[in-house]
Amino acid sequence: MLKVGIIGTGGISGAHLQGYGRFGRDCEVVALCDVQPERAHARRAEFGLDGARVHDDARAMLAAEDLDLVSIATPPATHRDLAVAALEAGVHVLVEKPMAPSLEDCDAMIAAAERAGRICSVVAQNRFRDDMATLKAALDSGLIGSVSHARVDSAWWRGRAYYDLDWRGTWASEGGGCTLNHAIHHLDLTLWLLGRPHAVTAVLTNAQHDNAEVEDLSVAVLAYERALATVTASVVHHGEEQGIVVQGERARVSQPWKVVADVAAPNGFGAPGGDPELVERLEALAAGLPALPHQGHTGQIGDVLAAVRDGRAPAIDAQDGRNAVELVTAIYASGIERRTVPLPIPPDDPYYRAGTLVERAPHYYEKTASVAGLPGEIRVGGAAADAR
Image (cartoon, rainbow, N blue to C red; front, side):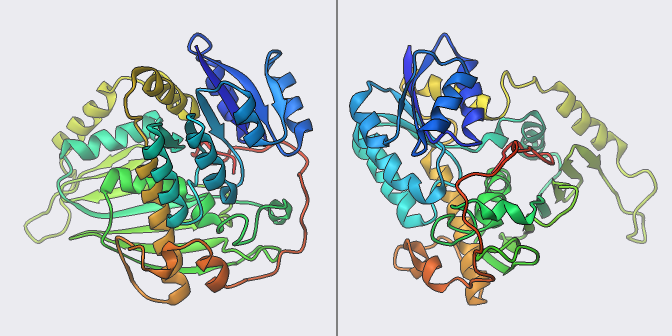
């Protein structure tokens, strides 16, 4: 029975607690920590964790408890220090996305995990979804041929008050805007589906949130050897219509699931009816995939628990988390410096370091409110499964 602690009991901690609750034979949540202990007590009562102890200091919790694994569900700027402290205490770590605001922070976390011989997994729960698994299988099958273009829409909508929460809306505390804290999901999926691009060109703006320093909209072009991908990151899109469309040599596949396969007439235009046989093969592939046993956070938590128990690497490790942060960093560097950014980003690049965004990023507006909490429940919108 693995003993689990939760650091940070705000909105997203509920997804972690629900996930651990599904594996009651394998683990027990024995400790909750929050700088506002009343929130931890509320979570304790909500989930019936009568035996769990509440702490208001993470290091004190790590010293007092005999833990095997902690979930870190705190603001991004705190992830490095908390993860390193847990790893140095010999505790495995599952840390919420984004892994950290800088590559320097990410590498410190990776080094701590290697020194300790412990797992550091970064939340990328959208890989544990049937629709994404279908898209991945279609691309891996090779049926669509070489990829020409991908359109990735990380479309969210957030009202002005969203950025009144104290840690949101500044480069120093949130680490960035929608590109880092919302589109990180779709950027991770882009890397999972297509691999790492060799260069990034991007633009940023704040279109609608005059109480936040950070961007609420970015558009990036990712350059591959013979393909391009466009990624829109937004919290200004009404309807939150998210999706991924991949155009291949022989067919297009997408999430939400759709298949189209055009063929050329003698004059080069599309022939009526396309390629129904290829469409049928792709539809049969999708229909034949087994459903995942667990979705979202629960799926990833189940994998991490099994990895700890079996002494293996998790499906999503710290390098995966770092790769997504590197792509975000390239988007920010490109948008701020107005240049194309090659990948990988080396340690001598200013944008590798913690603090460069705080020094160089524009303040689109100044933060005008800073409250410790916002009323009401978080709402999971669109097709994604997170509530940041």
